Length: 338
Image 1 (cartoon, rainbow, N blue to C red):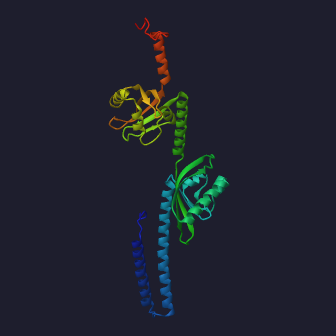
Image 2: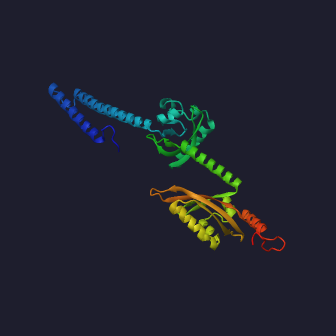
Image 3: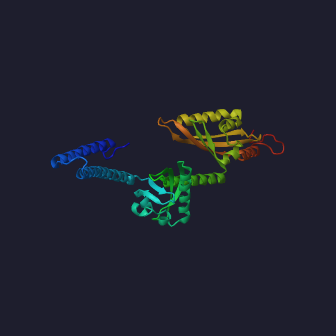
């Protein structure tokens, strides 16, 4: 156990022994000085008073040492930024640190014996907290959960990751200790990232482009739904190999050279090639990408890019060439082509 006050059980025993020796000396000295007979009323009175004084002195000493120890522990807990509370079976506060008190615009002393509703005014939330701790105390199993609470100062909802530990106190009454870490900033960042991801997906859907990212370390490829629509390859553990097998053999060297230049020299990656979709349709793909992340040695570990179906543009381009260089009646080359 961590000894903060430099005070331990061995010292208590030594102190008790010293007081016992001192008490015995006082008793013996009293008998000798007053010529008392052992067993007389005066003798028994002296013995009783002496030992009562000794025991009281020991208890007082231990009490103040324990009180000092508790004050140090409380001071440490008050400096911790995490929420630390102890509640009874009715959901009332038995203990809380300063972090909780600031959250509820109160003080630890004023919060004792009250539930969350007394500070938040949110009865539904307070009922949920009470029912939750009661269920955990009934199960007698430690649980780790995500939950939210209302900041009384501004009405803002704060998010916490809580560890709840049920136990029985010295009177065998059920209690629960809760240690909760404020993850509001992390939740906000995740929500913002999700919103940005959805915005990007909407933009790509409008532009009809598919998004992909490739980890060179794990060889894992991730993509959005538009990429699946364009290529016809569904999401799976073998997405990369399935997509590569769709590329026409005569176009594969073009892609391999471009990817090698991108990975080894960070050269611009922009290639046009053909794939045969799983449904048998051959389409043209315009694929562009770049290095998004490097390791400590400057080696690419994440590549990102977009693909676009340019089949129609290729067909239109072929029609224009046909009109420019071939006679539309005979199909023979015209003078420009000649």
